[in-house]
Image: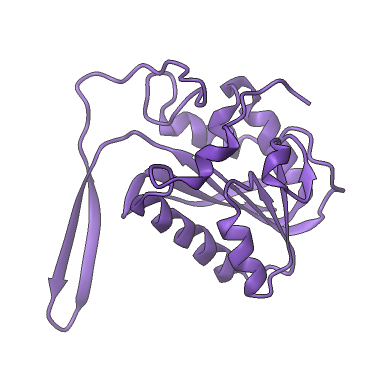
Length: 210
């Protein structure tokens, strides 16, 4: 197992962590899972367990791994060394995890997610790119909402803060490089990437195994 920084388990169970924006992210994770109707799911990075607990109550077959035994995952394991056979899960969910490892391990982690996934990988990563949010109610049309980029004059430089080694949108970590890292892995196809309207800091990547 690689020596990585662990998020303290008690951090997952307080109001400052589980703010309103994060709940929108939980909802999006669940919605993406439901959309692909998987018969088996692996959640990499259990966190507070909300997503896996909810999906279990919806009768989804889901297993969890985490590097922190205090979170009581099904298996204590590292994202770069997942203790399951190849093609074990229809869908692998890995949200707000990979920024906790050095970027030079990003490709290795993706290959391991690909190995255990049979069909789809749902990934989310922090993205500091600024966005202006617009929401308009149009009669007979309904709600129209969109994000407008607000470019920075100078890219932010990332400094390790004890948890995150990198974040999309900071110097040396443009979105294009993340997309290129995904696309250059044989057998993976990026279907879609988007920032969550209610929480643009969380960028989702929907990846198919081909």
